[in-house]
Image 1: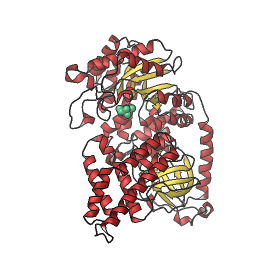
Image 2: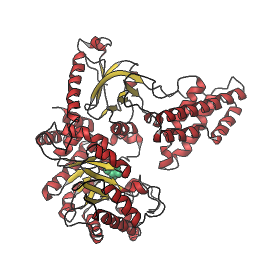
Image 3: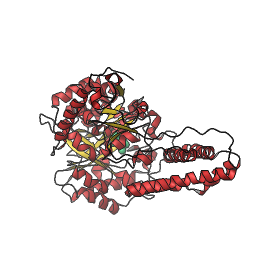
Image 4: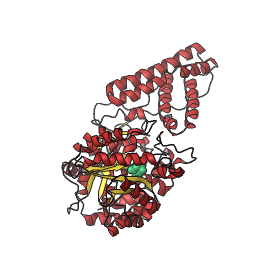
Length: 577
Ligand code: PEP
Ligand code: MG
């Protein structure tokens, strides 16, 4: 953790002397700089010791059950305050805390002489082990279980329940990482910024911060040492947190944010400062996402994740049902607005019950995306054919400019196979409306050969491209810091695809999380990308930052970043002006 000497006016920030100025480094999310007092989440209590209970078994049992009931009541109260989906999520957690099987197991442990806190801890540890071994979905519930356990142990041992601080004035939230129950309750008006000691750029916290438009610095080691109410300056673009900043630093930050506020008021199509158009598109998963996309001024859709509509379907959706669902979305966009539909990305993190793929030891490297319809002698091909026919039919009667692309393509023959199938379903291959996603290093490095064929465009899925470049499963929290699209290896692959686009005159876009990072968006443009598709909440900031750089600036930033040694260095060197 680097420490730097401070200026003379740290006291002006209402804090300790200049010598106390301390800087922490992490991974930034967003570009804003904000200052405010720290408020920390209460920490999870330590593991309760396995010592004999001093109270009677009956008293310990009552204490344990009362703690679980208090947790359930607290979760429900917070759910009621938040409403909507949050209330449902917290109700599900409350029900877990009141589960009769849980009560039975805790009671049995107490009867065997454990303290209330220890019995709760051991029972949840048992569930944890069981869930962690039961596949991805249930493993994902482990965080919920840990959260309930920590809350119940806190109540049983008489310390504050871990979770968000109760504040009425704006603050910078500092935490080890955020529990799902906390993230759902964040109040955008009070939380100026998020700072966590753990987590990487694709952690739950980072994604949440991105989608709520809250600047964040994640993975900043040492920040848990910050006391409540210490004034910090959080610079999301640089990925730094300065505790007890100097007054000069605070003034400079205020000037920068005033300029940023003016810039975010911009509307209209995306362009650089010298008017190079960069189409700003929205990522959507269904009709519910369309209003936000339109409100953000999206110029269309760069990624419509169609599989999201059918994650729970046991049977393949029928042709008429698909036509209706797609048309509803296409109709929302006006003449000329591009809507890029991704065909079903089945497999790995998005299994579809009606596309059987069999058991695989490593689904991320398995039959997924386009492969799901080509493997097994084409036994699933009819599902893809029906989908392409439905897209074609739905696109027929709308003014929007509908494009279609296939996920997880590695090389030219697969792309040609997809073009053949799409053409036979009536889609417009000839005019470049059928394309592919570049999600593997193989596709990036052979993009020239792919685009030399009938493939009309390429959209780079930086989430998968990063996981395959870094050989790090994107679902593994433990490898979260590897999942950083700023890594120069990823940038070089994007540059290879960008060069292929320039050589063939075919458009290259990005539709992974990378497009939502305003600074990285400029680098992507410098690498040859001409459309950026992202969560609608990110569009305003990307538009604003892009408008401050010329194409030449972007090219220079990209040149510096791609020759860096690490993701962090790439970001830093790109940010330097
Ligand atoms: C990607 O991989 O970057 C992408 C956009 O697709 P998904 O996140 O749905 O896999
Ligand atoms: Mg992908």
